[in-house]
Length: 181
Ligand code: ITT
Ligand code: NA
Image 1 (spheres, helix red, strand yellow):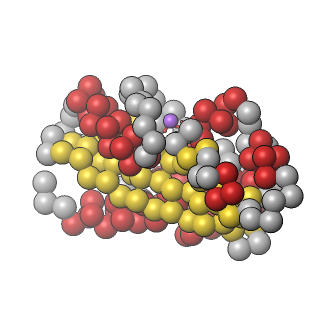
Image 2 (cartoon, helix red, strand yellow):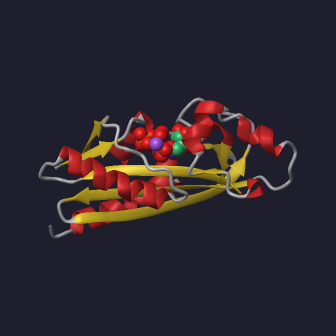
Image 3 (cartoon, protein in one colour):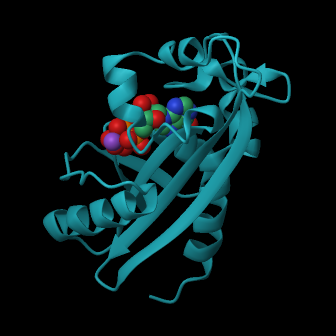
């Protein structure tokens, strides 16, 4: 079975392909991404819309992710992609200046939609905002430190073992393997 992952983000597909036993195919279909303040709502709506448009026997996967910084009241959260595109990831450590509280959390909701409906799977990880370090990963990985290393200083497998997306994919994989549909 091949999992259709609807996203414009190759980094997400690389991580899912390495984590899941199924093969993962990227579908670069620009589903209408609603503006909402919850990544779960965005992911489930996106998956439902994408499946309605694409159809097929098997379902589709959508992943919506946000980075929430404690001292910034949860910002950028669901606006993370917009902030990366406009201000760049360096804006996050810059906004914190020498703030003592540098805690942040990545949260991912993976949504799977097919003819039967939508299922969602969540994962999150806490870490610390630092000045950019590392060459691997994507997005905010260089400014997110976990246990002494940024996600951009980890291999895909090392990041998957502890990350928001790894945890969401773990829950999805368990359900997907056992589902009766
Ligand atoms: P799609 O909506 O097409 O899937 P996107 O990159 O817009 O791709 P999101 O809205 O979920 O996806 O991403 C929100 C932002 O968070 C965006 O700037 C990503 O680069 C970033 N991001 C997502 N997952 C990440 C991860 O595991 N590590 C670092 N940054 C991540
Ligand atoms: Na997006």
